[in-house]
Length: 114
Image (cartoon, rainbow, N blue to C red):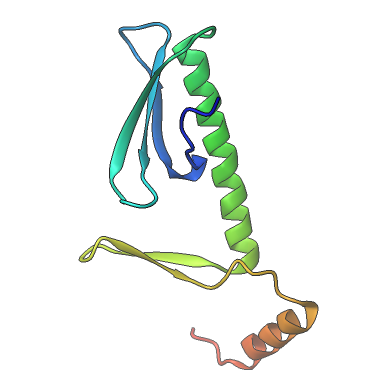
């Protein structure tokens, strides 16, 4: 049975509990309310340390894949500290070969900013 439907990209911290061997928790950003939430669990069979390590590895793999996808698609994100918001530029949409060639041609025609 599903206990929590959590996107791994939203997890920012995961650790075993130092007082209970089978417990672990993680902090994440809720997708709809944008609030930070701490989820705590007690493992049935494994230790909390082993489960928190698994969540940490999943987060690292997901982050690596996301960064690779952003690099390939030319997506960038900037943070505005005054409004505490992120702004994404670009698209994750896969471009066709023609669109990619047009983009490269435009980039070649632009004067260098040096």
